[in-house]
Length: 106
Image 1 (cartoon, rainbow, N blue to C red):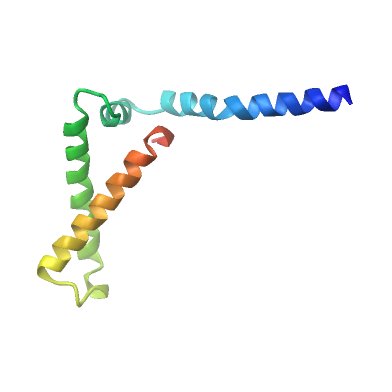
Image 2 (image 1 turned 60 degrees about the vertical axis):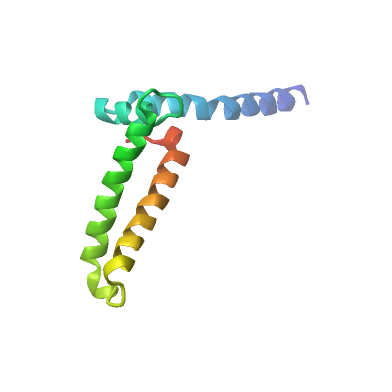
């Protein structure tokens, strides 16, 4: 009984610290540019707003490119609707990136 209890406690202890170890090792494996992005995107960083704006511009360019690539599937989407769709995709992607910032591994 004592051995089983100790085993459960050890498993619980490892489970509690494993995510922290994973986060540290994931951060350590990032290249310099990725580390800069992650640091600047954290709330409280002096360049946070600028970094968020830069990332949004990148994501919007990617969304426009991807929508243009799939234009044949989006025949009914034209003009302002196309721009609005690209904006919505970039907005959604930005929220997702910021929400999962601490999990970023490169």
